[in-house]
Length: 511
Image (cartoon, rainbow, N blue to C red):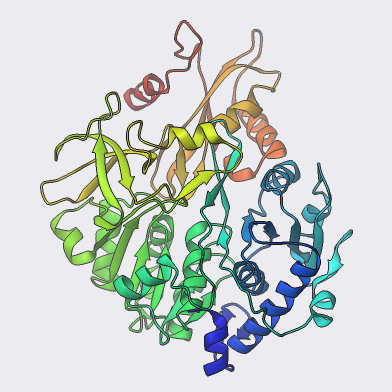
């Protein structure tokens, strides 16, 4: 269940294609190039457990880098190309990456990456980048003979922490070879979602997210074909389903909203009859939106709840969801435990508590953060772990989520931690105090809103609001900036200075 097997049997079959251009890569090419890159990495001194960082937009070369790392026992860390240079540099350095592969499409950002330690092997594909060796030249001089020893590697992706600093989710490396392995996700995709060699999978989201990367590479491990969108566009998405006869696809609820907003004439003229499974995850889907999608596409929607940590997973199909609107399903990976947040005791059905997943062993750790790792574990059961979500199960074991981890904002399927935005705004001379929360947004699910207590003598108004938003965008990724700013006389804090965001949300809702 890896490209080499399919390259040997069907070398000319398309492993992945770019929807907008038709550019494609066959299984034979994917195998050959990933083997050559594995040799380049090995010759540079990388060994099992080392990290390869990849900075790219949605590009077919990403799959070559992924499989080169995974067939070498390495961790691969994809970096969000929308981040600021300092944010990218932090991830590259914190991960300890010994190789950094970049796309020339991100040349300016790649050239600005600063290294605090020994400089890694640096390769650039698609064109020249200052300070980087040409990817294509490096591969041209490498062997295409696979190593006899090919230990299976894993992804190590970064998700933000409550302090605003991203944290690498570091899974435990398996002890098997890539030639004999059946990856957990591939098994789930095959068994529960019907993915196989005849599948055509549409991936419309950025590959630096866990689900798009994991699922598209899972399809390749099963011998299917991936159709990759450079970026999501509602019309382009429907056109790709029709053109490539897509059988499986994965979305976040915001994508559903944007497709539903298209004129009915554009929606109904597309032939979507090939689509057998439409998966959605990453953010809560409004009941009305999901109902409209089922009415349009039929009962082919399948929802799952999981995290980058891969500590557990629940799933629900359309038919079952229609009998229990709002559920995220029953467990398909791990044993679900709902525990009292104060005592840690397991709660009966119907009672709200922290969502834990029980596995045989703790399946992950947060890189360079043992305290955060420990905080994710149950105090009495170290093999029970939580993402910090809150919910309950009904009498039949169906999970319903009632809140999300800490004060995280999920906007369009993207996780945003308010603390990072607050840290930036605290530096603005017009800001005396600030709090950032997520507020309901009909399109994005949630949007970022800042509550600002102005410094004494500062005149507030639309001009200052625009200035504050622009200030944030100049310091960190634009999607983390507030979409609106509300000026207030004070913010609810305890005597010790802790911000009471629950009270702030109540004020907003009441207003």
